[in-house]
Length: 373
Image (cartoon, rainbow, N blue to C red; front, side, top):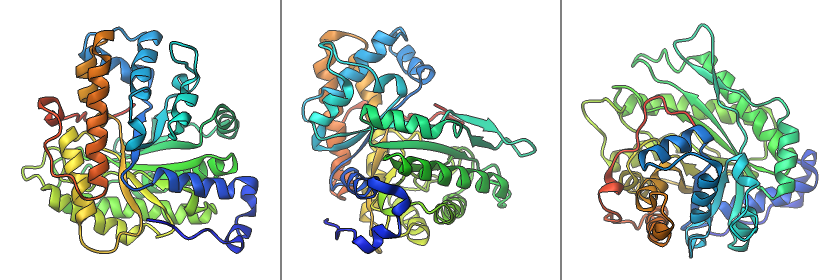
């Protein structure tokens, strides 16, 4: 799908963005290109250590570098990956021959991105709810990341459903996270980075899909009200929400088709058509379930004025890690697994995935209750 160019009159309303406005729009649209999505490789040092532990690989910088090199040098990665989210350490690392990872990605036409939040902190007086930290010095860090070659950023907020009567997520948690996401988005755009706004409603609990839909709708609506108040240019931004699903412990689990309809309906109620792309997180689904659910979202009825695509971490890498096992001899095999999984999701983005990619690892759950990274 092609978009009409943003008019000079529209840009005049966004003069505060200075020289970056047109670039932000161009990059957001590039990430949301048909058949493409995002590889989320922004696991913190602690989180990647847990992944390495499962395959008996020591969590040291050199092993982290070698693993990310495997991902970024995969032949044909650019066919279905338009952007890669990096952890700060990775943004400044190089390949074996000294080529910066950022340059490897750019040579493939893949936009480098950067995780800029600093994790979650408790909201006192709430039922275990939280808000994301990292606002201090964010402008300076964004400027530094842009200078290094990053062109988009990600900030994750976490919302909890702890009941089925609407008490959680609480209004204070919704408001605090919405305002923080909007302020982050504004700061990113001031410094040339396309903000990915990620308000993740965790699917931990025994609630039905209807409760997940109501809560997700309330959260996303609050985010777009806050972004309007903060003068965020939606054309140069992206949304990274959870898909609307049954709680992880629910007795009845929604089908992929039901997930597709419920998710699409929530987005139709809340996300302005100016937003070029919605890049779903996988939320602990298996690789195959994530792909099938993304396909179902794209096949759901009704208007869908945005690219509906993926920003998967666990659901793109679990089988890759199992194939690699830290061995240089397994790099080519692991890269082939990554390319196959990316192609499956590229097909799902277009509503053309019929299933069957990968073996047992692709069907294994990646769910972690109360997931942090």
